[in-house]
Length: 359
Image (tube, rainbow, N blue to C red; front, side, top):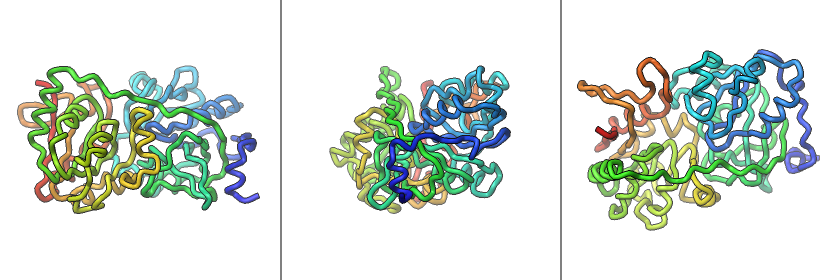
């Protein structure tokens, strides 16, 4: 049986974890909306005498059961971004660690063996006729983990969209797999209060026709998108997108026509939102997903003339210093990709970096 046929064999679901992991190993867990929950549950059920498995990941929209107190002997959390259920608590309580790193630099941790990976647990679409699965809605740092890990173990999910760009993994790169249909986590667009709506209006006034945008996640970025309906020829080069871009792309407001890098394409590393968004990116030739080391590279970002980054913050002091990673002495989210885009937009010809927050 070919590797492609084996991956397509839904009855071939029995993963022998002892063949791939031993105590003290380090595993990568798929990111954002592509957390392979079935693999984690299966590993826990079959853990036997395993202990001290270090889990490495960024933001994970999931129950994140590996970070629960009852699994503290089996798993040790090492998060590269603080967020998602149970993760912040594990770090605050000393059951886990946070490794600060710009998102653009995280792939090097894997590929240069700074954080060598024994296994990468990922979610993929079923393979196509050529044997290629898609990483779907989460290419980001997953792509580097697949390249660097000793073993790649995949949850094959028929509900994972097939996205374009550099999102593909050949079945020959996968060492073990499990077929499980899993709905992707959905985040509905946030409710926008009057104050946030005003901020969105002000920021939209700073955006010119033909600008290329990086949009963060949350109320303020969504509010900005609502006030861009009368703009023309906008582009997207962003770590992530959510539902707010759909109508603007359908109306032709976002058409990427005047981009000077990846002209004609919206470029992202991941998306998170409603089922409408996941259906929208599925096979969409106008949106391309690339790894974080490409999209978040300040040098690559700066190749877009008139690049505008739009992000929020926790606080800004009177000297202009921006805090977006912590509250007092307590880590809140971590570094993430904000600094990458602030630097890239500042280096861009005609670019600008915008930090928006309530006063």
